[in-house]
Amino acid sequence: MTGNGRAGDLRGGRPPKPVVTATGLTKWYGLVLGISDINLGIAEGTTGLLGPNGAGKSTFLKLMTGQIRASRGEVRLLGQPVWNNPQVMARIGYCPEQDAFYGWMTGLEFVTTLLRIGGYAKTDAEDLAESAMRLLDMGDAMDRRISGYSKGMRQRTKIAQAIAHDPDLLILDEPLSGTDPVGRVRILEVIRRYEKEGKNVILSSHVLHDVERTTRDIVLINKGKVIAEGDVHAIRGLIDQYPHMVRVRTEESRRLAGLLAGNDGVVSLEFEPGVLVIKTSAPDTFYGELPRILSESNVRFTEISSPDDNLDAVFRYLVE
Amino acid sequence: MATKRTSKGAKRRGRRIPPPTGSQASYNRGYALTMMTIRSILLDRKTWVLIALLLLLLGIPMRWLMDAPSDKDAEMEVFMTIMIIVYLQFIVLYTCLLYASSLVSAETEERTMTYLISRPIARSEILIYKYIGYVVSVFSIFALTTILNYIVLAPHGGSAAFTRNLDLLGYTLGGILIAVIGWGALFILMASVFKNPLMPGFLYSLFWESLLANMGGNISRATITYQIRTFIFNGPSRLEDMAQGDLPVHGGHTPAMAFLVTLIAAAAFLIMSWLFVRKRDFN
Image (cartoon, rainbow over all chains, first blue to last red; front, side, top):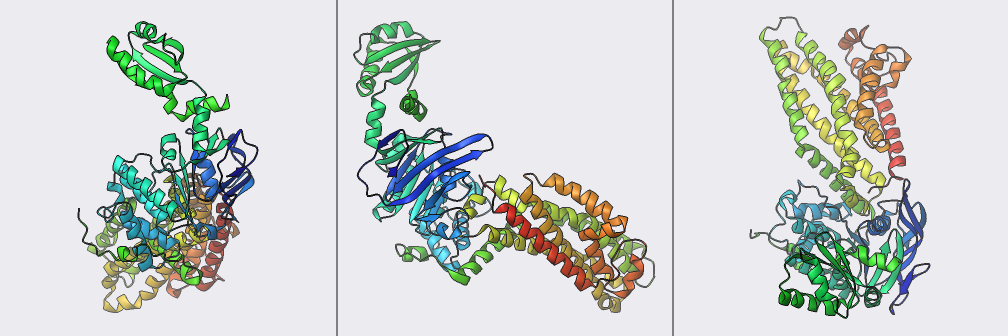
């Protein structure tokens, strides 16, 4: 990745041959800022676009796919400008976040029709659509109406329409959202296979774990700005510099706090009604210790949660 | 569910089919999008409600036939009254509003426009092919029920009247085509300008195409209704008397001229629509 003017630059050793370049890219929705002055080059291979909900990821992808027009600046895909340039769309495949379909079509008709709208002849479009649907394990369901599909099946159908024409650049917006475990594995396999074939993938997600399973190269977006980019492990390290928060819902907060007070990794303990909030600087050790302490002391609890699983918390740490 | 499909796709899997270019690709795009629009209109529940309503309206000529007078050509007066007053001044107008204004806005609201925009197809092509799909499907529905009305009424005048009055049927179908073309393009323009085009479209239909078109004078010429009437009433000479004094028509215009004026207006509306759509964000 190549970029400038960002909060953090944690890049790996990729050659600087960008498939996407954004220059001063800004988008306003009336008085609301979508993204602000993004200068970025995304290199070949797979890149994860990571950020909490509402960070500006989808706005960036919509600008990238010509859905919306930049208020300022420019975005180029594979060296070509995007806005009102349908030619470049032949080389990309886009899976949008929204669960939108022509519900009256079957899955196969949906993919075939979109290929035909892309200019393919009927027989070619049918063959390509069928291949893509089968690749995503939708062979048995492809002749059924989309309106009867589960969320996971609809997600796989969206991905099928994005990959069916074998594009040079695949842009996936939250592709694993709402998928069942089997579908999730299949989608990840397809993405990895795609990269192995030398193609480019941009995958947007608000779940760090999903991105980590497909690539090491990530771009972090928050509040419409790129705040860091580069190797995911470096980002992880950065995140680990900050204390992780764990919330235990229990009526015995004070007794549990007494038991945890001497633990090396515990930075602070806070009380909320019915909840003990623990901050730890050694999350890996702490997550191993906590169940043992709860079990041995017989402290009754109803829920353990970590807001740190949510990228919002991570981003709060990064921008502090 | 096990599929019985013979997998041609599987045979070709792994072999890249290059993206098509040129006029063949353009034809494929146009055909696919037009057919998709036609299918979506014909499968729409409101289309079936419309067809049911139009079939129910066949009750009007059927009721008239029960105590029909023996006047020569009386059945054609009934036919033309149904077509001009019920169809063209009311049902066709509001059907065009409903379908044409939703061609773009339905795709936007249902967020399916994303799939079209991210394909190698220009926004102008999307607009044109969807418009063609709308014209073909909406005109077909009205043509079919118009012909049914004719088939019900025409035999009253005898077998000779059935063929003698085919010109009336032809001009009526032409008038419906003008209506679908002209109003369709206008309502697409409204849908390109307004986020919710139904209300401005309804007000336009009510005040401009219904009230203004019947006021007479030069101002009524600026309506699609005027062109439709000019087309129909300047056609078969026996219809001229029916138009005199009741409905404003352009005496000097031939039906071909009315058709041409409508086509030019529709083209202008579509170009203006494209000017709006090409700048528009589709979230």
